[in-house]
Length: 422
Image (tube, rainbow, N blue to C red; front, side, top):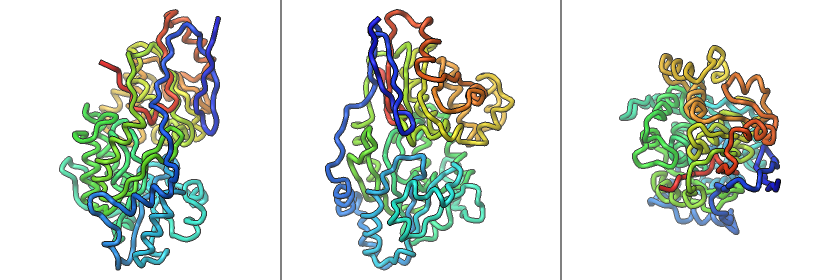
């Protein structure tokens, strides 16, 4: 039998596997887009021509600035984004010690200082104060009221007290916020747990979809939080599949999003002819597959093009395991997807356990295998089927697939917007 060889990102490397030649295999990957020839130049150009009239020079004379930056779960090219931005801030007359970088973890576990070098260039780490946000540190949170959708706005006090408030990150597809980027790095990344939970509860709204922005209640709630907080300036990047800068956009946050979203679609959206019997999806390698909490996004995106009753193989290293103690403990007395749904309805929305709901929503419809470094017992406890390799998973599903099976391969599912052609 003739076979074809394929490779998928996995952690810091790749996994190789083979498929029968007679299967209809579709590579679900956006067109390859070349990186900006001079990424630092692209960032500088964006800062020199900001959108929405938000020129940093207007803030000359301020006494402090705070910059929200993403944590280790996001592939943000800080080495290109931060140095030009920080030079602009110093040009305003701010000394380095008056410019604070705040690692925006949202409800993720705080990063210890020993890990800061994983995301911040050494020269930045040595020159500026860097703090990590903690969503449960109530003493360092301030309340600014509620949004029109009832979300209480608890935000990092250090960020609020700065004269100039900035956000840095990527604009890319998000499974229920539509797109990441803009004020989200502060509105969620520097928020208290209650704010994150109330905002994320909007994910059950049918309009809270991948790639949906203008009428997405979760995302528009984020925009309102950003407006209440008063985020002055955003610097965002759009990356290609190799995590390289294609575009840099700077200016007022809303203007940045309106410009960046179409650019993000160009590098992330792809049409498929029909749903598949089998989808083999990689989260995209590190850091997208750092843990299951992050890799679940690949499952959600890939499930969009998997037949009801079909099979989904998620490829994600997950060296940090589930990525949420709350998620793991919540699953201890749950043994079926129906029990997940019932417990979720009974207890209400909570960050961490919401991953159980998201996984169950898709895995109840399609048979789901996980190829990872996680202990098989933990994978089973989280109601997924562990597989030692892609080949091992294929051996299990092969008997149930038609001879002319339609198969889709998604090398970077977490960053891909797949759309079934109508």
